[in-house]
Image (cartoon, rainbow, N blue to C red):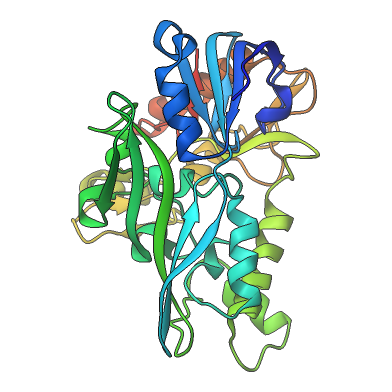
Amino acid sequence: MTILENVDLQPYNTFGIKVFAKYFTIIRSADEVKELLASAHFKNERHLFLGGGSNVLFTRNFNGLVIKVEIKGKTVLDENDDTITLQVGSGENWHAFVLYCVERNWGGVENLSLIPGTVGAAPMQNIGAYGVEIKKIISAVEAIEISSGESKRFTNAECNFGYRESIFKQNAKDKYLISSITLRLSKKNHHFITSYGSINDILKEQDVQELSVKRISDAVIHIRSTKLPDPSVVGNAGSFFKNPSIQADLHDFIKKQYPSLPSYPMVDGLVKIPAAWLIEQCGWKGKTFDNIGVHQHHALVIVNYGGGEGEKIWQLAMNIRDSVREKFNIILQPEVNVIA
């Protein structure tokens, strides 16, 4: 394990914010994690674990130790005619792992294609898209307790998964480093979900007669590629805010004023509203402010066109949140982790 000083973090965050870390290191194994935890730099400095950098916004230089997690590996734990159970290192690229599964016709993650970030971030925020959440296929999460260096296995139930939530963002926040996840995928008799978003429309356009893992993955990749900017071209962290769930009476009140309001009833009696729709109604879509702005095709994506400052992006996000609250009495919650 090598610790570097004064490292530029621009290559390590998809917003492309140019800030510097006082110290920086990369860990590639559980043994290196234990070495790290015993080091003076870790004990004496503020620290931040970083995966793919796709869900963070740096608002200033980081006066501490940034730890880039690159624990790799894919191991088959169990397999039969119907399913396969895999243990996957937290430092693996998520989309690359999805493609790895798609190539082998393993079903379960195809709707989660092209989501940026690493495998370790998947359970932390219970990533989801097009009717699928990671909690549906995760069997367990393996993590290392930071205070003791001991390994702990969290079952699916112990992860306390919720909408973009888990125990790792709640009671266990900053207490564990996720080292790997275990998930079960189907090998045949796949359960395809195509009713969300425009998946069915794309499949019809492509004249798909028979569903497959690859065809659904391709459709999702097509949708995301046309709707969302590529972080390697335009700095962004995907959806900046969570989709809010509101009380039914507030939904009904807004619906009377805005009949076109899209909404999705939840099992708990709440109604989920697309944050992008709320933001667009407030006039933010496509707005630019010097070298930052709101994406022209998706109001939920705040972008850095080059040279943007994290603090100004955060201020823009707060201005958006304030306008939605004033217009609809709904408070948007950031999905992005803001590092101040």
